[in-house]
Length: 217
Image 1 (tube, rainbow, N blue to C red):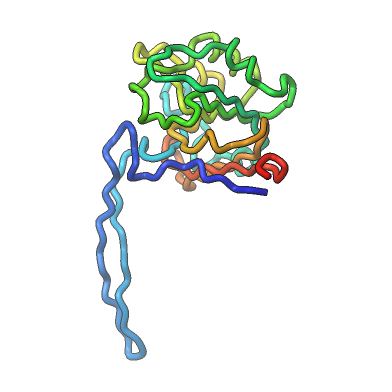
Image 2 (cartoon, rainbow, N blue to C red):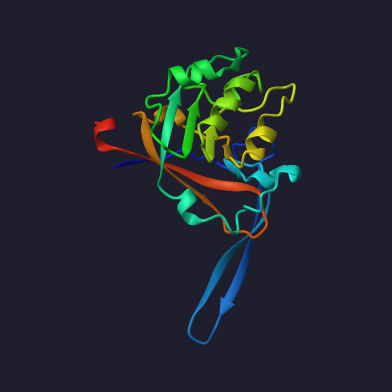
């Protein structure tokens, strides 16, 4: 297998300021030994780096699922469908027709969907929110019975309710992934690692793809 890190560095955030990590040195000494511990005081927003949104990120859609109680099996080594597109800045809405045309298997039964809409482009390489999921795409994702969506595009500038509809359907989203174009093959295994944090519905996470050997040799 080959592992691909799909996680954006927390210092490379699109929407918010980079987090602060203040360093404190703590002198520790006993009769036997003396050394200096390095401790960090963190300060950051929940939308920093690559981050996971549980439906409760929108208050009206809260289904009780959060970073403290989400079953590990829902996030670990889940089979995922992968869709690759190559949209350019300002190209507008991505439709259900476009997504379905690039879906390898129509009946895989996988619960995770990965949409690499921007090809080799990073989300910071396009004019913000000028490529987005249109209403037909959102309806198609919901109808596909996916429980997790990982995508480099979501909402438009007009706020058309993309997240609201996804969360209302109980779909968890992962935002601002990196390196999606490095995924080869129509299916991968995805693992998502947020901190265990009771009641929290949005926070940074680590995102890993596991590819089959034959897909990258």
